[in-house]
Amino acid sequence: MVLSVLAAGGGTTAAPAQQPPTDNKGMKAVALSDFPLGKQGLDDFTRRQMRIRQITIESGGVVGFHSHKLRPALSYIVKGELTEHRKGSPDRTYKPGEVLTESADVDHNARSLSGPRVQDWRSTDLILGRDSRLALSFDLDVAYTRARFTDFDPARDRIPGAPGWVGSAAFTFGNETGWFGALKRSLFRSPATY
Image (tube, rainbow, N blue to C red; front, side, top):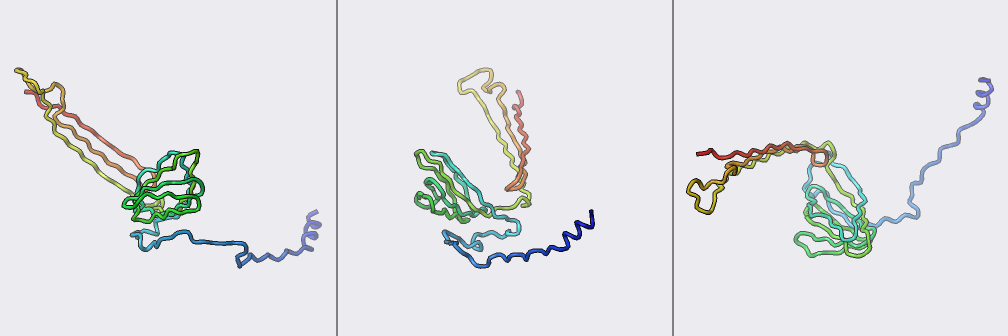
């Protein structure tokens, strides 16, 4: 049985591999927008990755105000209309086929126009990868209060139980594009009684 399989397989020859095409056919590429990466103030390209996202926003929806200082992007409008409020520029409405160029100097937000539409666009941006350096911050807040009655009280003018000192401290840690956490402690101390 084994010999007959080997004999049958020995008489066949492998078909030559077909070469992939090297010329374009039926393809058209049009540059819609660009910006020079060297002028974006980014010096950490080895830690970055390209990302493309599909973004949808319901009619009347809002994209909150944000900066592209660390995340330049190009966004292509597929469906619907979007009004952009760019810091330092007049409002602009984008329609299907148009591109928002979001270089590192752009701070903006956007709103979908009213009507029964869902906005749909594709955004390609240059983000820090998951291996970006760890971010760590420390916050400390301290306040001294002097809570008093405004009316005259012959016994005392202090409000019972009002804190004299309020303090809080917090550590925040994590990656800019990954998981993060915080640790916070608050202290309320009443003034010494006298």
